[in-house]
Length: 132
Image (cartoon, rainbow, N blue to C red; front, top):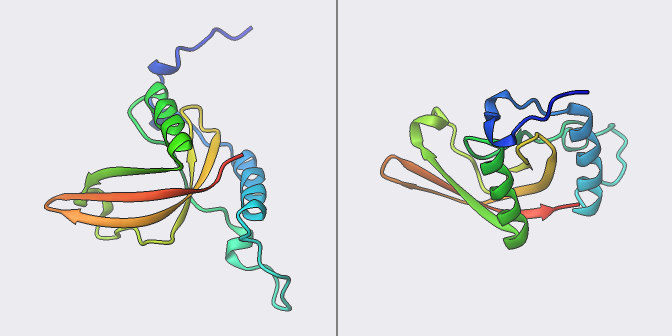
């Protein structure tokens, strides 16, 4: 029997995202968000083959779980980070990603809706495209 782990004691950098669970989530999200393209003669597109990047927010699993719950209720959210954290590659509106909870479980497909730079900070707003 494994000992129970206090989720608030787990740092998000220690959480590993389950690639199979992400693939299954991505297959469902593409279908429900109507992102699955019509069949083509040239084979599957990148959007069909490669899931978007997965991420979790916060310094702990508890903080991440609370953030995810707020995003799911509001169906939108935002993050703010230093410009330097982006290494010159700012997010673009329309870009998709998978928001995960503190345990690394995919919870929502989100799309960047707005990016603004104020001084040394970047605020990235997004909307929920799909949640199971």
